[in-house]
Length: 113
Length: 114
Image (cartoon, rainbow over all chains, first blue to last red; front, side, top):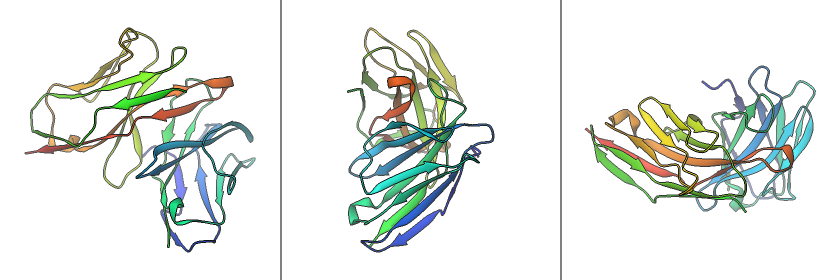
């Protein structure tokens, strides 16, 4: 158990809908990262937050957005969902940024029908 | 940009066999290098890491050495067990502008037969 929690574990929804994925980092960690794992794209970095502020952006679509709240939990919002958004979404956390080790949550499996 | 290339899987071995999973990287600067493991139905777990050239990371009998001259970080284990069956990901840290993201290889699925 990494100490990073993600909810829900599974999510099934329809095209065009909007969903919110939630992540609670390990106690004391200030950085939160979101990654997407899909069969065709592999594991890709989406976005990083540090202590409430966006620090880095990767291959995140404009339909996707994220935020980190004052209690340090984070939410990833996915809207206007398409079939191709079906994937496993991982959250990771680290103490700070730079070379800190990232610890991953168990993931949320999103299926768009 | 930075990238990681892993040997293609799947890899199937017998118990107690020697394991090597090749990983090479392309990066500007000197990234930290990682091996993560993903067991069926679970998230990624850090297996080992190395932060500078010639460093050796090790954990649970697995080892990898950061080779700057060959830009490689090959994963090795002397005697694998059935419980080592999983998907293994090589990754580097891309520390642009004070932030950090991990760049992953495509993963190598390892199956160990008893």
